[in-house]
Image 1 (cartoon, rainbow, N blue to C red):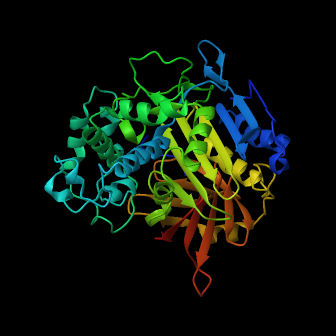
Image 2 (spheres, helix red, strand yellow):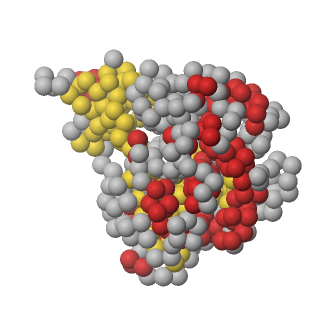
Length: 447
């Protein structure tokens, strides 16, 4: 639930398990994929890969707590940020199965406090981020609010009177605000707190004993400390009041519990088949209900998460019964990079790690053809410029990084798993680019 993600420590502990030969997985290559991020200090955390329900690879890197030098291990509990959203979506669908919620009904049906400007917004539009409600974590005041004791009503009041960014259903725009309202609906309809609902309806029945709603005042066994990357190594992350994220990002869990969740969800132990189908049917922006859908080379149901000091990634390839879980207690793009490479490798695809890809040497006059500012939105742009014989990229609010030529009009970054594919007009002039990252293709127009 953090405000932004990058354009999306050395290995101290390594545990590898090969308990099943499924798809003849190359465990050594999986170790290399994790080490590519861990050895640079970019990743500390836990990784798990399961095929046909069996764990084929498990790996722990770095420390759960550097003050006490406690290593990460399979029972370490991590905050999972927005991976929480699929549990909230499943809770809403449970209530729909019980006849207590209709996701096509207006929000005000179940949450009477909804302002008049929200009268056309449905529960489904909250679930799919097509409501038009501004994202609370992008508001100027949120950087201060996250430190303070804040009630749900106070939090919602910061955005409920703001104008909608677009007509409901018109387009897709990720907003944590949607899932704060969904939390209120779960509580108002069920008569239980969100924490009580997910505990009694999901975690307890599935035996997810290491998963729960985080609480700053609670003692949570094996809970990891969150870190930011620093020049001298990991440094403690900022405090965040865990009463704020709620159903948008407040859960903690382990790799094993999240594997259990995926197995149960897709085996029909959580929801009826019709509800699972509904949950995993993409809408605008390939966002379904609390999960993203990637239909390239099979169907991948996934979601990432980020909150101060933690990043998470959970994905399940329904075509091949592959589950990948990556939980990091240091912010950055490493969790996403590792997860994407592990999914590709488990599928039998070739994975090129940093340092393994050929770098084409282009003359400076060719590099200069790509120089310019490329707008994804009015507020988020990618600047391309040259430093000596190296092409650089810098996204709004982020650092500058080198990009390397991989082919005609194709460049790649090594700090994150991302590519830039430049587009030209009929005269051969560069007019735009497409950012390929995290399974998404995002176009940008040259200004």
